[in-house]
Length: 293
Image (cartoon, rainbow, N blue to C red):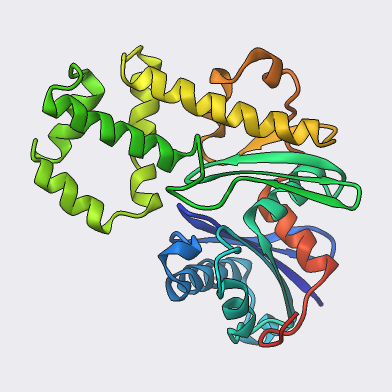
């Protein structure tokens, strides 16, 4: 029997799902963040952790692993050396197909048909399939891109909290909570910044959203600006011919109501998730691990 393993390697966590040839889900697993910016070795470790947990959950034995066709979607695939490194890694599967996290999300959301998606989670990106054309908007990586994302919210909130600490703007409940989290010390924030990555910044996004929903005068415009940036991603995909668009990612449910009414009217619920898209990818194509595409 052939098994299909879908892996969604994202900036916050990695998820894996195994199904059989009839499309029945057999098992699932999770791992840590796998954004390529944290390093290929750590990303592969998270992928293997999630995959191993899914195999265990499915009750598959060592001999079954060689009959698995895997599809991986990973954020940051456009970084130099990432695709080559993944292809060369000796994953134990019969075949391996690799695409961006946006590509598998779009496959799942529209079940392989034309359409667009905007992912808003740790990062942000717009992606659409329109006939033979692939449209990609943004997604170049934090901090130069990923506008409206969780990492972007966190960065803007921390910056304004430092402004408030300096007296450049008035403190609000959000800025005070952030400063208090660093014991009120700017040096603590700077030391944290020296080691922080996009995932670390994105951890502040729920706090920002909570305060914005309560009308915090600093948090609210940060979220309004994020919504404008996501609005624009959606509008570009629609203008490029996407017949419809889905809003996906961990921050999507909370940001949805902040979008312009005209944009919300043109969104639709995804028909499937990114893991379903990764499984479709595994079914469509793949090469034995260790070989170049």
